[in-house]
Length: 66
Image 1 (tube, rainbow, N blue to C red):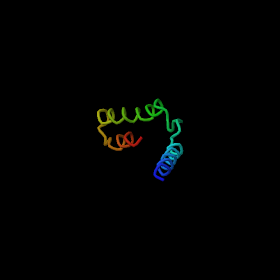
Image 2 (spheres, one colour; image 1 turned 180 degrees about the vertical axis):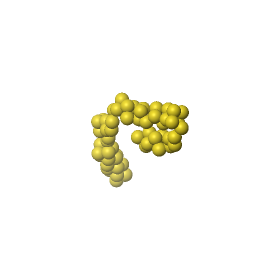
Image 3 (tube, rainbow, N blue to C red; image 1 turned 90 degrees about the horizontal axis):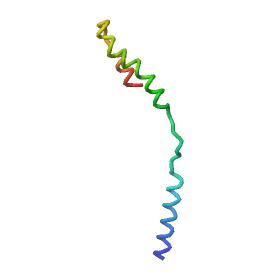
Image 4 (spheres, one colour; image 1 turned 180 degrees about the horizontal axis):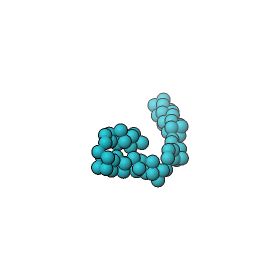
């Protein structure tokens, strides 16, 4: 009886592993696209207070969110 239970448990565990296996397909944007979306805001966030002496917190926050 115990052997049957163990076999059943192992079979259920193997089935669960197969179902929850993640696909190897990558999701999201490629790294180069993320870089070119974020880089201009980062540069603007650093240069803007030096040149214009303005409140640059919004630009930095937007770069962090991206």
